[in-house]
Amino acid sequence: MEKIIFYSLALIMIVFAIASVISRKMLRSVIYLLFVLAGIAGIYFLIDYNFLAAIQLTIYAGGIIVLIIFSVLLVHHIELELAIPKISKQIITVLGCLIGLGVFLVTIYGHEFNVIENNNTTTTAEIGTLLLSYETGGFILPFEVVSVLLLAAMIGAIVIAKGKKLIDKNDETI
Amino acid sequence: MNIVFGMTYILPWPLSIASEGTLSIVEMVVIALVYLGIFSVAGLFLVLMERRVAAWFQLRIGPNRVGFQGLLQTMADALKLVSKELTGTVKSDKFLYNLAPYFVIVTALMALAVIPFTKDFHAFDINIGIFFLIAVSSIGVIGVLLGGWSSNNKFALIGAMRSGVQTISYELSIGLSLLTMILITGTLQLSEIIEVQKNGWLIVQGHIPAIIAFMIYMIAGTAETNRAPFDMVEAESELGAGFHTEYSGMKFAYFFLAEFINMFIIAAIATTIFFGGWLSPFGITESIPWLGVFWFLLKTLVLVFLMMWFRWTFPRLRVDQLLTLEWKYLLPLNLMNIVLMALMVWGGLLIRF
Image (cartoon, rainbow over all chains, first blue to last red; front, top):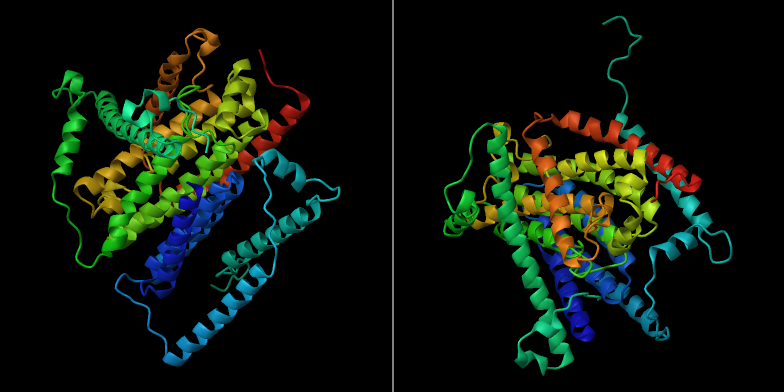
């Protein structure tokens, strides 16, 4: 049963990943990408890692894909199709992808995976405790560093979005 | 997957001798069909309820001719919609155009699966219940965006963009107001949240911050379902019918049903988190467990009525007012509310019977 679900999910993901790359309509490839990400969430559900699955759905499917759709909606007209690149560029891309795939495969097959019989579902309470623990194996330092980084990014975004004032208030010549 | 549902022993006999794998598949299919039934019946009934409530608010009678008090009116409407021709615009993106309604429908169905109707009538009791609901509801907006864009219609596109802005903004408020209540329960699992409420419903346990959280949740929930006074997505007077202008027949009905089911889901989550779900008030029917459905639906329908009351009372907001409300008022209020609730839980100031 689990095997059937896994292989069908894997097939769906591979088919849609390829479709997402070769589709010439921009919004369609975004939607194919959404299916790939939802498939990954499905695999997390399959191994009973519900928290990560929900994170995958919220961040990638609900957040990033919606943002991409927004930007496509703003710049792309429905009749436009993406141009086909030159043959030389295509060959270079294919070679690059093959090298990347090779590196992945070598790394994955060069590593021995131990099957662990683990029937416990990771609860949110455990994740939260570990995230804020400052003992060995705790993640308090990365957590704080990331929060400072996000704060900096947020302030930067606000400053950029605000822009400079078009009319200077002290300028009385107008 | 933990499907807590005593379905296996009421199946017809040819299946009782089948293998366990087949049985579990059949069980899943049966549960899915049951939920599809609930989905369509509840959706149609809510449409009727909306029309009757609207009529009542406007001193009319409303549909009361088809069946007793018009109970079959929306069924007849649905039949009419099924028989209608499906039209579309010339240069629309047909694939995405046809896909969009299913996004909305499927996410609504997935959210329905985790809602506890009674202790046993609970299809998918996942340990991250509320978080799963928030995650799933954040996908529904993709259907609206796609529908608006692929119709190749300016008004539909404007409606879809407004919907995206609105849903992304108000999702924050929904998440944070639910998080306020999670501070009391200490768990995300919906069945355990209801267990906690045997000592008093959470809105009583958490008193002041809980009431603030409830009000924020209802405002944000109304906005999330794109209903008036936050219905700029459809704004009839400016945009035709918003993102579903170009949809006809059953595809339009999908959007329409999903809107009402989403309203039901928002009300059902509020019932589960704030008003004790299927628990009866003061435990008066604790010895009769199946009455839980009755209490659950009663509380949910009262909240649905509240949302309909909003719709027929308040005028529509402008886009800038909508965003100001969320980012300048609800969000800071929510953050302060969380701190207040945390202090209360820490200081043991909850009311428990």
